[in-house]
Each structure stands twice: as C-alpha cells, then as structure tokens.
Image (cartoon, rainbow, N blue to C red):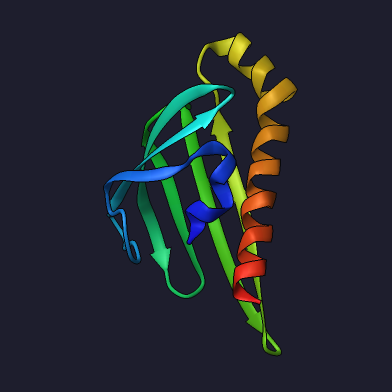
Length: 123
C-alpha cells in the first residue's frame, strides 16, 4: 500500500520483506528514483512496540545515518500518526550544506505526501 504514495519516485521493495507486514529485526531493500538518480536503501526494523511505534534504520544506502520513528496514538476513536526522522548526509561539510539547502525540505515533503496518501486510503 505504501508504494502507491511514491508513484513519482517509482519506489519498490526489491529484497528482504517485500510483502505483508514487517516485524522486528526484518529488513527491506527499496529501489527508487530521487533527483533523477536510482537510489537503493536497505532498512531494518530496529525497534517495535505494536501498536504504539516502530523504528526503521538504514543499514545500507545513500545516507551516513537515517533513523525513522513511526509513532501511533489512539484517542476517542481517532488514530494519530507522527513521523520523526533523523538523518545525516555523507561528505562532511558539503553533506551538511546539502541537508540544509535540499534534503530537509525534500524529506519533509516526501513524508507529508506519503501520510496524505495513507489518510486517503484509510479514510
């Protein structure tokens, strides 16, 4: 279902857990196109406390570090999802400049697009 939100980047799970639900310790490798370049990223579910949260971390890919926390809360029949991302680009000072000028805004938009898609699918 998530890949439907990433049609523009042609994101696809290509290795590891590619269908169904993913569990603690499992990995998935994604292939996508960003900035006109093919990107491969392998993430592992590092933490999971269903139904409250799970954390995926890049173990191989374009970032020096990438950690994505997905938190869920349920109150009065309404489920709220919060995404928190910590990342660091490679290449030292140049990478930090790219983070500030490009990546922060790009990743925020990417997550917002995915979340809007999910809300539409689940509503």
